[in-house]
Amino acid sequence: MILVPDLADIEATATSGAERRVARILSAIEGPEGAVAFHSVSLRTHGTKQQAEADFVVLWENIVIVVEVKGGGVSKHDGLWYTVDRRGDWKRLRESPMRQAQSAMHALRAIFNEDGIGWYASEAVVITPDIDAPPPTVEWKGSHWWAKEEMSVAAMTAAFKAVADGTRTPPHGVKIARTDLLRARLFGEFTRMPVVDAQRGAVIEEQNRATDDQARVLAALSRNQRMMVVGGAGTGKSLVLAEAAKQEAGEGRSVLITFHSPALVGFFSPRIKGREIDLRPFSELDGERKYDVVLVDEAQDLMNAKGMDALDAVINGGRAKGRWRMFLDPNNQAHVDGSFDPDVYELVSEEALLLDLNRNVRNTRAIVHVVQEYLGADIGDPGIVNGERVHWRWADAEADVAAAESVARQLVDDGVRREGIWIIRATSDAAPVASAAGFTVTSPRFAKGLEAEHVIVCDLPEHYDELGLAGFYVAVTRPRVTLHVVASKGDKQRLQELVRKQVGK
Image (cartoon, rainbow, N blue to C red):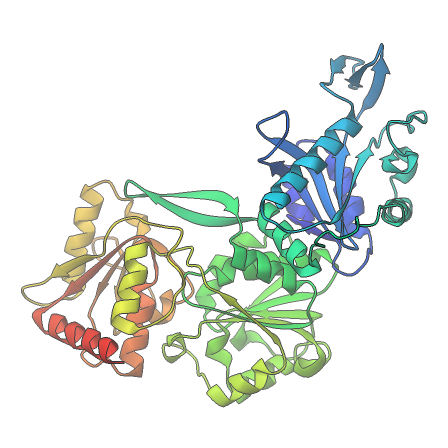
């Protein structure tokens, strides 16, 4: 069964030992295809409380099962419910564990009713892993309270099947929730994806619900063998890829993440730390080991006959029959590093389910509009981050690194962290270096796929051919907070001509 977040994250973050034990069992259950368990789910709509929490929400054969886990002792005395810890201390509960599970189930249904998702089967279950099952009662079915006897993979699997078999059928004449919509809605409500919120010039990283696009992709990834995910810079492709890789590893598959740019090792390493996931740049693949699933980031760099042959050699079953996910940018990044063959892309696309990521989760609204205005490139709907305008710095002399460093020093004087600033030379392909003033100076080739809080672009192209357009596109789509473009009078004329070309299209 898929866990969201994966088992390693639950082990690290769960405060309840009982929940960790349940999570370990859930991760080992071979449920029906697409079974998924979401841990520690906050429900914003609740009948008696401002917010409720479900310990687990499980999607099992299109049935939503809300699970309440109570570790230690659980007792009822004089009509009141208590938990009992290891020291024998009693703590009163506001309601019975089953009532907690049922109220969370109703809160979830209220959320989905607001969205008009339709009728779906739902059940409430209590797990008390440290005690025997409570005596029979008319308040709930015995099959819905699991205790010590169910704390094994086989027993809990049988318990899920028993609950699923006993669920009620839909009332006559109601709208039934579509399976794909229910699944995507659950991923969207309960999957936490990092997004950027720019307020008063500062970026705050916070955990937010996945965007509708990200949820749809995550929901589809686990149920399809081969997928092509297309999205412009800043739409969250790499984040979704990392989450998908963790889910695949959690299912017991051997997993490889590969890419053209070695710089992406630094992006993915902390996000998959502690998981059985191989992370190897494309140049290091030798075909000696095959994987159950291969995930390719910045796949436009490898979209050529040689690249596809190399991938074919590391996928169990080959590219035609194996399990893979390719994430790529439909714009012109491929001209910066790597090689893109449109004929190969068309051929590979026919082998996979194609999904789009359309919402930009990195760049500010102003940056998105600049990219659209000057390049005509689609990097998603700028619906998340507002932030500052783009800062055009018109240089009297050379619009080079020295001019960019002057801007960088101003930012530091204004309180910006030095390590949060990149200077990108749009016409360079050099590896990152530290300038004399201690600022990172890099190129589109080595910045592609990565991001920085503040980006200063200099050395603009003299010719906006494929290479020039690609370098400019990569450079201006890296920032999360502010974009500064250092340009000369000649650069200004060329940029104006670029806008006129876009208007004339």
